[in-house]
Image 1 (cartoon, one colour):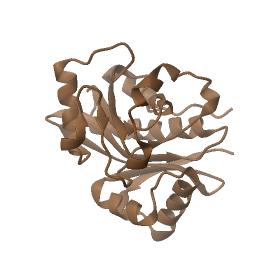
Image 2 (spheres, rainbow, N blue to C red):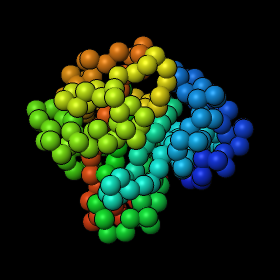
Image 3 (tube, helix red, strand yellow):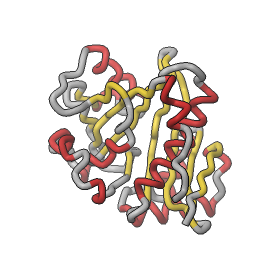
Image 4 (cartoon, rainbow, N blue to C red):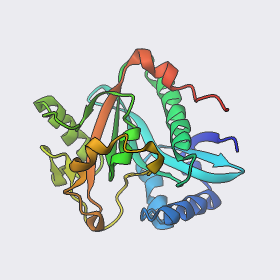
Length: 227
């Protein structure tokens, strides 16, 4: 089935849409229940969601903002249904967010920041430049400073280990990337060790980011053609 993607202000979401998103999150066991999602409407400005056969199959709450003058897409939460088309759904959602970023930040490099709970989340950062953290790389002082800035924006300023980029959880859902695609066949397996310290019961996550260059942003904003 073709995937239809829409973006609107989070405050414009209706009760039925929020309920459908909560149902999807329950299937994924992400902890994004209806009460949690209602609060996210206050914390994030935009929501992009994907529909297939009029059913919500993925969504992301996020903002386009400047952090110290630097353009950024900050992903508060993202949840994608499991299945053979989950990577396609993810790419469709990200393409629409990049389309919005082209309009908001023309001719500028843009930082993409998120919280990951498994190696599959690195699919979001796959085509970006200077991704941190990454295997075999020691982050610079400036990159560690960026992690602290993002942690502050995520409301976890004092719970970041700026060497491992681990964000300690508090035992309840706070927002992260909920995405898993075993069909990637170990594409991001080299990142597995970065998640070894994570306690999923505490809702720990990994603060990760990368850059999309201005010259790549426009092409990234075009979704893949349907087969």
